[in-house]
Length: 606
Image: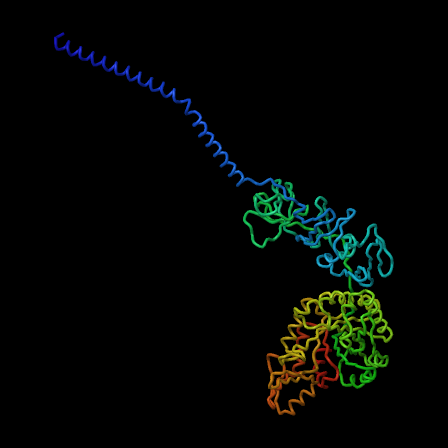
């Protein structure tokens, strides 16, 4: 080895020793550093733990928020509050798919409903007489009557009994046993206690239903956080109810245990149909007398006994008249008494000429002293009126009665309809025709309830005139063709055509509007109306809009107008009778027409 090689080797070894020494020193420094860190760790541990706890709590809270937000509520609804029940006797009432505001009573395990609830929602033919505490129901030939606090009732004066009190009073409120109502009304019902509620069904046939695919929670509102009303078991069906606005993922239902709520769409099947079977129930049949010919009736205004003698002259001027209705009977007080102008010779003469007599009874003559409400709302006065009219009809051999009650209002309407029902019983038993006069249908007289009249009366007569009444501020037609047709159409929405008679006017009104704008009128018969035109040298002009001849003239600052009734205008109205297949025509009044009118009528009524 050379000297240079030896020195190079020694330098290399020294370098390795220095590197080894540095490595050892570095290791010592690392160990010292780890020791220093270990000496600091006891102070850092709580901080770490706290941080970890905060993270854990935060995660838990986040999870809870998410769970609370997206998981269904298990809260149960307060069903007593849901049904708005205030005490243990009250019972909530559902009719078909509607929860009523009205509350019934559950007494001795039996359901009672307010008599007004029955009237509004189950059977409007039940009549409650508050003044005499009497509950009535008119069958075709019998009147059912029950009193408050009794388990007995009468059917055509024969006593019947039940094992429960039929009517219970609570102050001004009166409740009737639902089982009693069910004797005369077609429905089924089921009730539950805790909380008390009853479900009544009177709409039968197919109902839309959905089926629970698993155990389903029915909630008060559409949302998983809404309280639970009830639970529908898997496989059970629920009735589907309409909603004003469709709600995504939820369906409004009526459960079989009487709750209306919401279920999630994903828990139910699609909509199918379920048949609700109608129970065995014999609906009463209210028979009617129907003539086998088209009725041609005219009213004869009789104001005193002597006026009856005019029937000889009046009938002599007619052709094809089948029926005359003399204005014979007047409501004379509030107790159901009447004044009568009936005359046997009059009836005999009409019958000899094959003309029937339907005696008219009205509330007009003594309108300033009698009150229709007082007469018709009380059972005793109502039945006295029935008996008085039937007695007159039998005594004089009348073929029919004609009701002309023109001052009925909304308060007296129920009693008036009950009067028609009760009178129809006696007419049916005695073979007497019952006809009822009505205004042309309008919103203000809807309470006359022509549909109900059409069940009990044999004929419903439209008074198709006085379109513009005599006291109107504006002149106009008595019976324009549009007015008449509208009256027919609207009546036929309620009454079968075979029971509808349309009445025409034999008169017109001659209108005067003076320079101050004051309007007056006078009623004229056909010949008198023609004479007005002739006297004033005015040529009538046919008006297609009204279906009448029209005249207008100006004299000394006043304007005179007239929409005339004569052969052509009457024929236009008769065309409607044929077009709509009505049971007949009537006319107000005998003596206003001219002879040629009867030939026109015979073309359509024979």
